[in-house]
Length: 353
Image 1: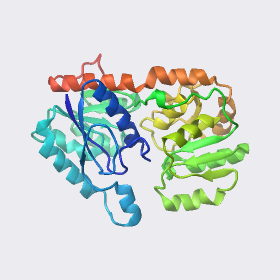
Image 2: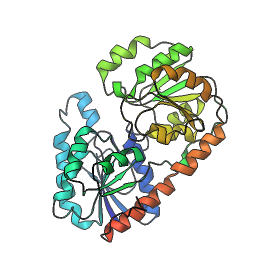
Image 3: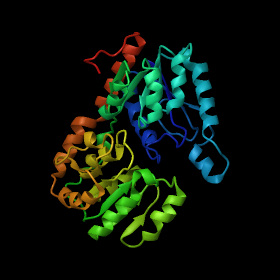
Image 4: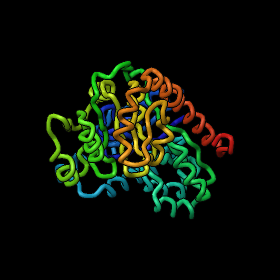
């Protein structure tokens, strides 16, 4: 199978990328190649992933916006879509990992019958409005939470394939090195790093915050004033440092205010044996098994107690659950099966969904 992947341009695709989708894709591509897929990526030129790279932009958009050389994401994405249209005839499947902009490819000659849209991002009201009027798009979602929303709107071809990771690249730590809490995510209000700060201060525990600086104003107002020996911000971390932070933590906090479409950091933490404490948002209760691989709190006030209880969970069990549910080999095999059906012109049956 020859597959053309449309990748986000915000960050470079690579294992050490700041972006969740961008770190997920290289691992997926390696496994797809092992299964016989020939992968081509439309991504930023500074990407480092398996398959053939066709550069859309010279470097990732986030860096361009940081230094002022880029103003608006949309123009570069439009160029990506035009490239996809030019190249589509060479491929069996066009697999979109980008946002709603790719929906238009479902109505164009050359991509209509071979397009797969993975809904990595939340199903917002705007997405709901669109899908209600165009229910025939071929979707895959990364959680049942997303799929239910789309199916309730009439989506006729929607298959759930959860995100996965290469479990061999994460080290099980049977004991935490202390009582430290870790937060990894974008520095913005919807991810809730400020909530993590309040939880750490309430418990008197050290907190390490890592992730890209996507909202300077929010960070300066809500995070920077609290930085000291107890609360530290370490910026974007590579895979080795992420492994170290996650594995050494007593728990990982995911206090998201938005409807998390999946929560890849949760799986990475669990692969290290580290329990996850999260707010009940989006797909997180689906990914984090309450009382087994972590704890789910209904409100912010419940997070401190959940952090205390998380230390009692068995870290080997936490790792084992992640292996059984989110190993990338299983994930890639499901995508390969879906590609085969797309190539044959068939749709998902109810049982396959």
